[in-house]
Image (cartoon, rainbow, N blue to C red; front, side):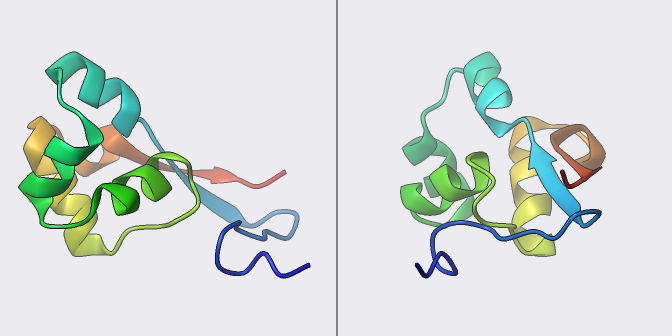
Length: 82
């Protein structure tokens, strides 16, 4: 089964980028689509980032943090994989 395009495959001990975009969107009361428009990506991209299936570029991560008015580290964090 090929998961390369839809599911991340991590080896034990690898770092995983987690995020709290869903929580921040709820606080700001905006949809995935509205956030996507503000950072010029598709709603599906935001969904993939929120679901930890896609790691955004540095520029996109900074744009997302800017929308929420918070430092990057308050939106994204690295964690050890299982």
